Length: 76
Image 1 (cartoon, rainbow, N blue to C red):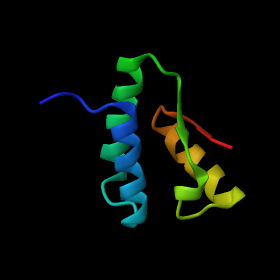
Image 2: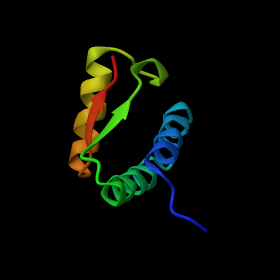
Image 3: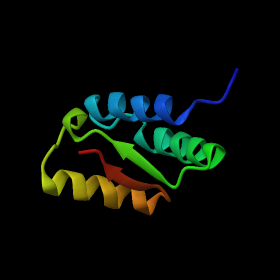
Image 4: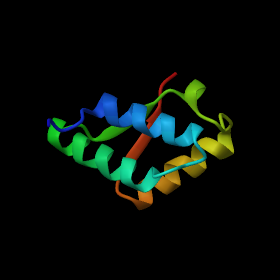
């Protein structure tokens, strides 16, 4: 079984967010490992796919991910 890519890990996080944050910490850890494997410094999320697509929701998400070692930015 191969390791998930950053895109696959990001999609898992979107699914988790839609499912009321089910297993979000495990998905963040998977994303962190995928970012390290691919040499990427930041995870990029599409704000239109977020449950809370407002400034406070995005800032909360950034803070939560930052506490777990993942830098997040949002696409335009």
